[in-house]
Every structure is written in structure tokens, then in C-alpha cells.
Image (cartoon, rainbow, N blue to C red):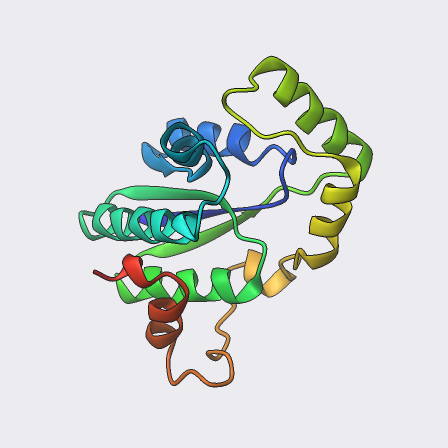
Length: 175
């Protein structure tokens, strides 16, 4: 059975390092918007284009899963609703989901993102401690039920289904 791996964590946590390991271990296709945004647009988000790109990567992952292969979304996925929608989507395609949470302490995180910028300024963005603190404050950690695969949340208020929610959040994911 195909598996969708959801990489969850903040910048500098080690998500991409772990995703690359999973890519090799599970013969998976890994998709990361960070590897596309900077080369295409030079910025992390340009007029909402990141959402468009993420939607197309989700669509591509769906095609990979339909073919019975494994896919990795190396997005960060800071919000529970994002992860729940993707859990639903994978299940609707007959695939399993593995949420891979990569936690990081603030000091290590800052050190890693600063070193990453020194090592490869053309491939990443400069981040400071205040920005990382703001992001940490809005990040929603996955709970045990999400990590063990038993999680089956209802769609958020105002949405009749997860399909409706996905259509609103990542409109290009379902084309």
C-alpha cells in the first residue's frame, strides 16, 4: 500500500534531512516547495504563489499515490487542518499516511538556519530569532493520535467535507 509521508516541523528542525532518508528508505518521491520557490521567484512567497505551488505538489503526490508509489510532502505543515486534510486525501486514494514530526529546540533551530544561510544563501532565506519565535508561537504540534495514525478529525466549521476545505486551502491540488 502506498504511503504519504507528511514532514511536520519548523525551519531548521531537520525535516528535509529526514525526508531525504525516507526518500531512500521507501523509494518515495519527495516534494518540497522550498526547492522550487527560490529558483522560480527568488522569494519564499510571492503574491500567493507558494499556495499555488504547494497545491500542484499535492496534486503530483496524489498521482504518485494512485500509481501505488510513496510520496513525501516536505512542507512543514504547521497547522492541524492542513495535516488533517492531507490525511483525508491520502485515505480517499487508498493510501496510508505517516506524520513525521521533527521537533527542534530554539537554540539549535537558530544555529541551523543561520548556518544554512551562510552555506547556501542562494538556496534559502535569512531568518532571525524574532521571526523564528513568531513562527514557533503559531505552530501547532501534532498530537499522539495524529502520529499513531488513529486521527480522524471532522472538517473545520464552515466546511461540509475535507474535499471542500482542500479546494479552498490549496485550490490547485484537485485539478
